[in-house]
Image (spheres, rainbow, N blue to C red):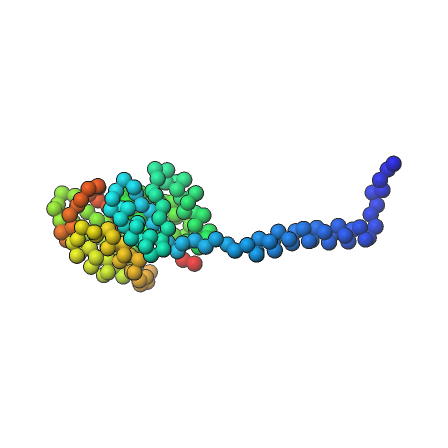
Length: 198
Protein backbone atom coordinates (compact mmCIF):
# COMPACT_ATOMS: atom_id res chain seq x y z
CA UNK A 1 0.00 0.00 0.00
CA UNK A 2 1.41 3.40 -0.92
CA UNK A 3 0.55 6.59 0.86
CA UNK A 4 -0.51 9.53 -1.18
CA UNK A 5 1.82 12.53 -0.96
CA UNK A 6 -1.00 14.82 -1.95
CA UNK A 7 -2.82 16.63 0.87
CA UNK A 8 -6.15 18.25 0.48
CA UNK A 9 -6.83 21.79 1.54
CA UNK A 10 -8.56 20.79 4.79
CA UNK A 11 -5.52 18.80 5.96
CA UNK A 12 -3.21 21.73 5.26
CA UNK A 13 -5.47 24.11 7.23
CA UNK A 14 -5.64 21.67 10.15
CA UNK A 15 -1.83 21.29 10.18
CA UNK A 16 -1.25 25.05 10.02
CA UNK A 17 -3.83 25.64 12.76
CA UNK A 18 -2.29 22.98 15.00
CA UNK A 19 1.19 24.42 14.46
CA UNK A 20 -0.05 27.89 15.36
CA UNK A 21 -1.73 26.64 18.52
CA UNK A 22 1.31 24.64 19.61
CA UNK A 23 3.65 27.60 19.10
CA UNK A 24 1.23 29.90 20.96
CA UNK A 25 0.58 27.70 24.02
CA UNK A 26 4.09 27.86 25.54
CA UNK A 27 4.06 31.66 25.38
CA UNK A 28 0.69 31.82 27.10
CA UNK A 29 1.81 29.37 29.78
CA UNK A 30 5.13 31.17 30.31
CA UNK A 31 3.53 34.59 30.48
CA UNK A 32 1.08 33.40 33.13
CA UNK A 33 3.92 32.24 35.41
CA UNK A 34 5.09 35.21 37.50
CA UNK A 35 8.78 36.10 37.11
CA UNK A 36 10.92 35.86 40.24
CA UNK A 37 11.73 39.30 41.52
CA UNK A 38 15.26 40.00 42.66
CA UNK A 39 16.11 41.69 45.89
CA UNK A 40 16.85 45.33 45.00
CA UNK A 41 20.32 44.94 46.56
CA UNK A 42 22.84 42.14 46.92
CA UNK A 43 25.60 42.50 49.51
CA UNK A 44 28.76 40.41 49.52
CA UNK A 45 30.24 39.24 52.81
CA UNK A 46 33.78 37.93 53.11
CA UNK A 47 33.46 35.26 55.83
CA UNK A 48 37.16 35.64 56.73
CA UNK A 49 36.57 39.12 58.16
CA UNK A 50 34.22 39.96 61.00
CA UNK A 51 33.64 43.57 59.86
CA UNK A 52 32.64 42.41 56.37
CA UNK A 53 30.02 40.08 57.85
CA UNK A 54 28.70 42.78 60.20
CA UNK A 55 28.40 45.20 57.26
CA UNK A 56 26.49 42.62 55.21
CA UNK A 57 24.13 41.78 58.07
CA UNK A 58 23.31 45.46 58.54
CA UNK A 59 22.28 45.71 54.86
CA UNK A 60 20.40 42.42 55.06
CA UNK A 61 18.11 44.02 57.66
CA UNK A 62 17.04 46.39 54.88
CA UNK A 63 16.04 43.58 52.44
CA UNK A 64 19.44 43.09 50.82
CA UNK A 65 20.27 39.55 49.81
CA UNK A 66 23.53 38.43 51.42
CA UNK A 67 25.96 36.28 49.44
CA UNK A 68 29.25 34.90 50.69
CA UNK A 69 32.32 36.02 48.80
CA UNK A 70 33.90 32.78 47.57
CA UNK A 71 37.39 32.29 46.17
CA UNK A 72 36.12 31.80 42.61
CA UNK A 73 34.85 35.32 41.91
CA UNK A 74 33.95 34.53 38.27
CA UNK A 75 31.68 31.66 39.33
CA UNK A 76 30.11 33.86 42.01
CA UNK A 77 29.40 36.45 39.34
CA UNK A 78 28.00 34.08 36.72
CA UNK A 79 25.99 31.79 39.01
CA UNK A 80 24.76 34.13 41.74
CA UNK A 81 24.95 37.80 40.73
CA UNK A 82 24.24 37.72 36.99
CA UNK A 83 20.95 35.79 37.42
CA UNK A 84 19.85 38.48 39.89
CA UNK A 85 20.53 41.12 37.22
CA UNK A 86 18.06 39.43 34.89
CA UNK A 87 15.46 39.63 37.69
CA UNK A 88 15.90 43.34 38.42
CA UNK A 89 18.92 43.72 40.71
CA UNK A 90 19.71 47.42 41.20
CA UNK A 91 22.61 47.52 43.69
CA UNK A 92 25.61 45.42 44.64
CA UNK A 93 27.54 46.36 47.79
CA UNK A 94 30.37 45.08 49.92
CA UNK A 95 33.04 45.73 52.52
CA UNK A 96 35.93 43.77 51.08
CA UNK A 97 39.57 43.90 50.16
CA UNK A 98 40.50 46.24 47.33
CA UNK A 99 41.49 43.29 45.13
CA UNK A 100 37.95 41.87 45.43
CA UNK A 101 36.45 45.14 44.27
CA UNK A 102 38.89 45.24 41.35
CA UNK A 103 37.87 41.76 40.14
CA UNK A 104 34.14 42.36 40.62
CA UNK A 105 34.38 45.72 38.85
CA UNK A 106 35.96 44.00 35.83
CA UNK A 107 33.28 41.30 35.82
CA UNK A 108 30.53 43.95 35.97
CA UNK A 109 31.93 46.12 33.16
CA UNK A 110 29.77 44.65 30.40
CA UNK A 111 26.55 44.72 32.42
CA UNK A 112 26.13 48.49 32.65
CA UNK A 113 27.17 48.77 36.30
CA UNK A 114 28.54 52.00 37.67
CA UNK A 115 30.26 52.49 41.01
CA UNK A 116 28.22 55.15 42.78
CA UNK A 117 30.29 54.96 45.98
CA UNK A 118 33.77 53.77 47.05
CA UNK A 119 35.22 54.22 50.52
CA UNK A 120 38.79 53.42 51.53
CA UNK A 121 39.20 52.58 55.24
CA UNK A 122 42.86 52.62 56.26
CA UNK A 123 44.57 51.71 59.55
CA UNK A 124 48.04 51.06 58.09
CA UNK A 125 50.92 52.56 60.08
CA UNK A 126 48.63 54.58 62.35
CA UNK A 127 46.60 54.30 65.52
CA UNK A 128 43.60 56.22 64.20
CA UNK A 129 41.78 55.45 60.97
CA UNK A 130 41.65 57.45 57.76
CA UNK A 131 38.62 57.14 55.51
CA UNK A 132 38.52 58.47 51.98
CA UNK A 133 35.01 58.47 50.54
CA UNK A 134 34.03 59.24 46.96
CA UNK A 135 30.91 58.88 44.91
CA UNK A 136 27.81 60.38 43.41
CA UNK A 137 25.75 59.74 46.55
CA UNK A 138 25.34 61.98 49.58
CA UNK A 139 28.50 61.25 51.61
CA UNK A 140 27.66 63.21 54.77
CA UNK A 141 25.68 60.44 56.55
CA UNK A 142 28.46 57.96 55.77
CA UNK A 143 31.14 60.35 57.08
CA UNK A 144 29.06 61.01 60.21
CA UNK A 145 28.71 57.29 60.89
CA UNK A 146 32.49 56.88 60.68
CA UNK A 147 33.28 60.05 62.65
CA UNK A 148 31.38 58.64 65.64
CA UNK A 149 34.49 56.47 66.09
CA UNK A 150 32.69 53.50 67.59
CA UNK A 151 33.58 49.84 67.48
CA UNK A 152 30.45 49.04 65.46
CA UNK A 153 31.58 51.21 62.54
CA UNK A 154 30.87 48.52 59.93
CA UNK A 155 27.24 48.21 61.00
CA UNK A 156 26.75 52.00 61.07
CA UNK A 157 28.43 52.27 57.67
CA UNK A 158 25.97 49.75 56.21
CA UNK A 159 23.00 51.61 57.67
CA UNK A 160 24.27 54.94 56.32
CA UNK A 161 24.89 53.45 52.88
CA UNK A 162 21.31 52.17 52.65
CA UNK A 163 19.91 55.60 53.45
CA UNK A 164 22.35 57.57 51.24
CA UNK A 165 20.64 59.43 48.43
CA UNK A 166 21.86 59.43 44.84
CA UNK A 167 22.82 63.00 43.94
CA UNK A 168 23.89 63.21 40.31
CA UNK A 169 26.55 62.09 37.87
CA UNK A 170 29.10 64.38 39.49
CA UNK A 171 31.50 62.69 41.91
CA UNK A 172 32.25 64.09 45.36
CA UNK A 173 35.16 63.25 47.64
CA UNK A 174 35.51 63.47 51.41
CA UNK A 175 38.23 62.49 53.88
CA UNK A 176 37.53 61.63 57.51
CA UNK A 177 40.10 60.90 60.21
CA UNK A 178 38.79 59.32 63.40
CA UNK A 179 39.65 57.07 66.31
CA UNK A 180 38.04 53.82 65.18
CA UNK A 181 40.25 50.98 66.46
CA UNK A 182 41.58 48.60 63.81
CA UNK A 183 40.33 45.41 65.42
CA UNK A 184 41.09 42.03 63.89
CA UNK A 185 41.47 41.52 60.18
CA UNK A 186 43.06 43.57 57.44
CA UNK A 187 44.24 47.09 58.07
CA UNK A 188 42.77 48.28 54.77
CA UNK A 189 39.16 47.73 53.69
CA UNK A 190 37.11 49.08 50.80
CA UNK A 191 33.37 49.68 51.08
CA UNK A 192 31.58 50.10 47.79
CA UNK A 193 28.24 50.31 46.03
CA UNK A 194 27.61 49.49 42.36
CA UNK A 195 24.42 50.55 40.66
CA UNK A 196 22.52 49.47 37.56
CA UNK A 197 20.12 51.89 35.98
CA UNK A 198 16.76 50.46 34.93
